[in-house]
Image (cartoon, helix red, strand yellow):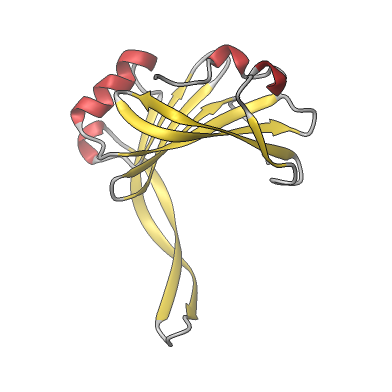
Length: 158
């Protein structure tokens, strides 16, 4: 099965999505989390769960899911076939250390935040963004072989 959510549901009441199950009414101060489980695909890559985020009025703001894949040319082209050329792509630029603390075993754990720099596909982007008229698609590398795909309103602050 392909993506279980159609773009036309963004900005609509969650009740229009029959198989959405309430997961967390207090997901954040301004949003509610619903989930859909099943066998789905995005750009020919399988996934099994979709998170749907609504505002407190139960209006769908965006949905997201995770894909286990590398960003190879086939995956990139499959997304482009659906959404066109990305509006912008980013690669990691600098890692800024934001904290150092010690784990249970005494190991040093460093937390950092990356700054991003615009790039081309050949630069191995970690974030790709498609800005459409009524929605936005973001594909973000979470770790090696794992991407988060988020589709929804261009601006929604949780």
